[in-house]
Image (cartoon, rainbow, N blue to C red; front, side, top):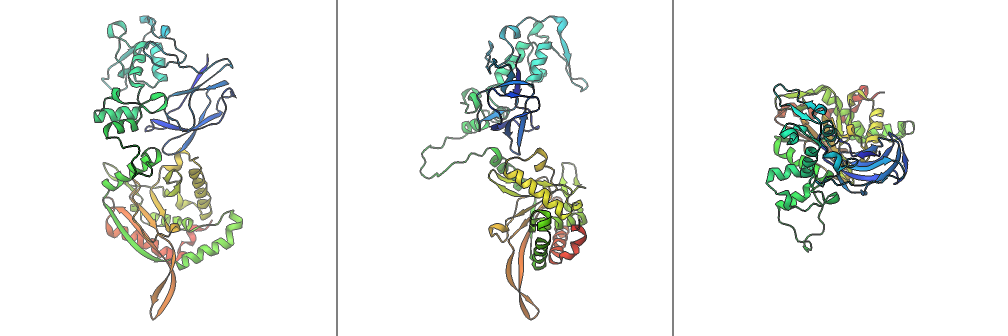
Amino acid sequence: MAEELFIPKLGQTVEEVTLVSWLIKDGDVVSPGQAVLEVETDKAVFPVESNSKGTIHIGPFKDGDVIPVLTVVAVIGKPEDRFEFQKTTSGVTTNGISAEESLAPIEKSNLVETGSDLEGAARVFISPRAKKLAAAKSVDPAWVTPTGGDGARVVERDIIAFLSQTSKATPVAQKMAAATGVDLTTVTGTGTRGKIVKEDVTRALTPSTPLLDPEILQRIPLSGVRGIIAERMSISVHTTARVTLISEVDATEFVAMRERLKEQVTAEWGYTPGYNDVLAKIVAAALRKYPYMNARLTPEAIEYIKPINIGMAVDTERGLLVPVIRDVDQKSLRQFGQEFRTLVDRARNRKSLPDDLTGGTFTITNLGVYGVDAFTPVINLPEAAILGVGRIAPKAIPRGEQILIRQMFTLSLVFDHRLVDGAPAARFLQYIRELIEEPYLLVSAIQE
């Protein structure tokens, strides 16, 4: 019997993925553990591996399709097998399970008792075949209305009936509809095979926009990475007590040090160390000195975090991503630079791993390369602060009776006043400024 290949769960909050590409062709022979397709969540691109050995028969899914997790996308078996949707009497797809088998009577001796570990939780009696189907489709038997044995047990047809009621909409769409009162029976699905997705529910809530509005050049749906960015930035702005401290810094010695590094280590290291590399080491030293800036807010307390994990905001074709370099204070400048470039490369090529974009305790975002002098970045929750970096440019600065040309740039520290007061945040920024203006103070931190 052919083995089903389905989209696995890729995190507690991931309800659907975008199919990036098939890595094999229909009819190829595959082996267990072999990557057969790539899918993308809001954070990263993941490979989906074969779970069996045999000939793969791909379903009607193409690059760019949005697919709910746990959807069967292929079957692996013999060359003569085919990918088919077998419809039961309830209209639910149950590959490999016939309608007759699913509705067959079940003997009481075959019942399996399930229950919660919570004291006092209700117990559910379920047949072995119903339990197997529920596990395959990630259905909690407690959600299902039993009909077997005069309503005393869950049988396979009950699981199928439950699936038929929920299969027309993704879990996210179901939650949105329940919260807003949208009747899903009146909504037309635009997802794979007519599946109702969250955008369909959104359209049902708002008047449709004329297709030929002459004032609109292009409409970009708030979905995928763009939608996640919009949601998280909005939450950050509306939930934090943001304060911004701005400091102009003399970066003349900072620039000179980076130039000397470039001359001396580029050939050996295989890359040219940049301003972001040195700045990240300086910020790590400051976070180690002032640990109250390496913090997060929970509902019960303010937590100071021991690891110094710095997120570096990166512009990609998919939008803003923040790869996280861990334990920056414990890494040499060379190690940091190598890891930073690896993470940036993966982010820009849609190859980020799950851990690449999570676990940050402080973020740096640099818009200096775009000629920006100063700006107010948005805190990357649940972190306490974010540092914005402007461009380095020559500027006439009075020094006593002289006017000197110095390399200057502006730092913008945005912090959450719920976690940190103004004076402690100012001391943190002042220390960063001191290390930039006199970078020899950082020698011990950047030595290998």
